Image (cartoon, rainbow, N blue to C red; front, top):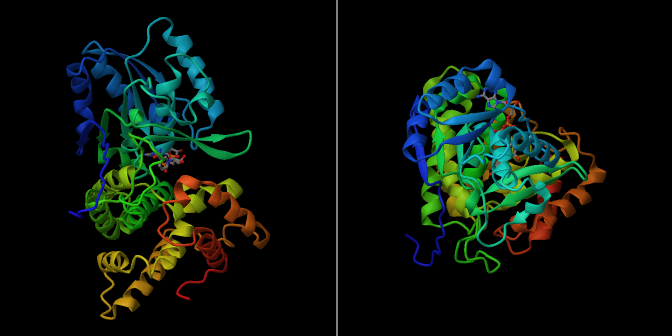
Length: 412
Ligand SMILES: NC(=O)c1ccc[n+]([C@@H]2O[C@H](COP(=O)([O-])OP(=O)(O)OC[C@H]3O[C@@H](n4cnc5c(N)ncnc54)[C@H](O)[C@@H]3O)[C@@H](O)[C@H]2O)c1
């Protein structure tokens, strides 16, 4: 407990986690009274795994009808969402679905989240960007993550790319948190190494970044009574600490050997626990700057987070020394001198990222020095993340971090 915490915690209504747990879903949906759904996925899952076929057969036997939309794609755009809305509405005709199921990584889950608000009235998704109005209308979402991962199964946001200006936009409301987050670690066993590394480092970033973020007592909720994010608390830190420990133990193991089931299960837990932390606490500079880097380079979400993570940790050495020492210990840094141990952590994380096959500085990402000022400006423009960075002078610190990440300099 921390006596000045102000907790506003909105987890998914049900968390079902365990190997093989996907087999429980049809009976659970029947029990909850669902009758007619849309399953949002991509062709990898509909054509190369038995999971869609098995689900449809088992749920139909219980009287639940489902339309499959397998047009999901990595990093979904607002155009994809609007096209999917039209297609699905044409297929369902007069009969509104009573739930949506997402099967896939963060991309399919985010597309499905956005469809929860667009399908009822067929409106374009741009009408829902930002916070939703009071008493928001959204279909209930059941999320089945297949990466470990984004943790989108426990967050209030859907991230889409607006192709008109290549920026990421968000539909954000607690009503979008899934009514069921079903995490079956076996879904992740087919992830190729690149997806395993990118999504795994995303989970690590969520855990560490939310562990270090602004306290709930200082968080600016902008007057919202039902905020999506509200700063770190003893509750979110509980999940973050466990997630960091699991990532320290299992992230590299899953990358080196995708058949290591203990490591796969460990990362499935890590991803969800990290989401229970950042899905309440929120994030700050790593994601804020990573969004700007992704806008410039179009590199994956996980890899743009990864390249920034060590440099952001380095910038927090004085304001978050105690927490960074805890993280260092979880990663096995046992140097007695505490300041030295904290200094070693960003170096260790950067080595880990390099071993995961991800560039470790912005030059390797193809960012030119002439882009650094624009990157700083674009990152600061994501104000909901910038304002949660726990330093006194956010613009100057962002500028220093981006410069350090370009030069590959730590520990100065
Ligand atoms: N809403 C949120 O809270 C939130 C948080 C973080 C990231 N995101 C978003 O999530 C997206 C990234 O998601 P991701 O990292 O999970 O990857 P992804 O969903 O983009 O998937 C990447 C690729 O991996 C494939 N894949 C996924 N699972 C697989 C499996 N089990 N076996 C084989 N292939 C598989 C997909 O088909 C796809 O081709 C980004 O668009 C990002 O913006 C959202």
